[in-house]
Length: 474
Ligand code: SF4
Image (cartoon, rainbow, N blue to C red; front, top):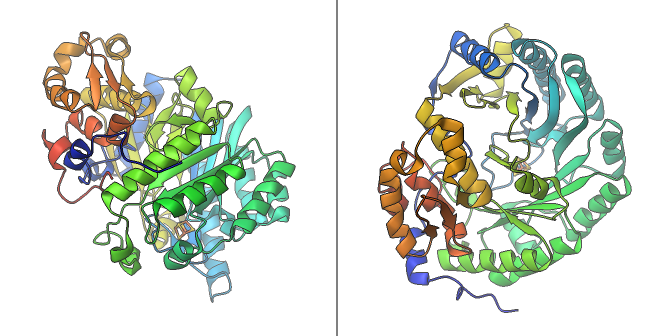
């Protein structure tokens, strides 16, 4: 098979690609949030109870530590060699603070609520010892009810986890494992300082299968230095040979002015915009030919995987974990920089520095630093963007029923703007205002379509980009 960009109009692609636009992992994006004190945060929780008294929960835990630094990393993490002086004490202090945070957060949501998802992210959660993971898990189980079919997921660094650790995690109830694979090419791995041979990943995946984890997920990245269409083809084929249940195929955003560690990346070796387009189109074809379903902006799932099932059931959501199931759940975030999302009420985010976080918790103070109370317009647009990113469609009747609006009146200006995108082949719009994003051009430029509905952006951002604060779209 030959990688080609023939499937899209390159002239149109060039006009819309490479702009600085939000990825809408929240609406409004965190750059529009403001400082928030403990009283304001508590008021958001009270409003959430009033609005939906019996809500169920998803819990996100942020473990910031990693042994070594990957040059492309844009996560909130702390590089700390386990063998370094003070590392064990620092980590244990963080674990104790996190356990206190879990108990305090559970008390804030009033009554023992049901957890339907637990997601451990980072950093590298597998940096912690099994004993520490077990103590945190017990704190969660003491503080919440756990649904019998709860999804319990952890992001794993395959360089630091072997069959024995996986067996212990399985015994603790973990049923979904997510690996940062990124790329299998040696030269790419060496340049970004993330060296993990194929055989290493293969063996860890085999151990997961033996232990009957429900879902094994890979994160891959395209747009890294030294990647070519050919190396990406090899990586995707190698990944497919291991049959991951779900793959996130992320676009690498080089923003060294904001992420200092990326300054170590040789920018002269980065693939250009059209090469990245060819990489994405190739991967899209390979995944679809292998029977994977294209989900949202950049995820692929086997039809029996929970993400594909959530898409079918209408319970898929776009959030800080990318695409996620459980669209009706309130997301509680614990740990440094973790984000809480109280559906149709607001967002809260904890402080970003580990020392600041731990000190606040030890002093019995709230770790919340900033947030955003949602207006009615925010809620309407958030629901619209969620549907757009998840299903590549906007069905006016869904919003009209939920928010008691007349879609074509409420979004008259946006529908006007969409005519330009329609004539460029990114979308089709029907008489009732229903929008379908085209495949593949519109899906690739989804962020441009979404920007039309973002009231915090300049109205021409979809074709001119937004200054400074967002990563580029292709
Ligand atoms: S392991 Fe993940 S979080 Fe840690 S430095 Fe690498 S990419 Fe970043």
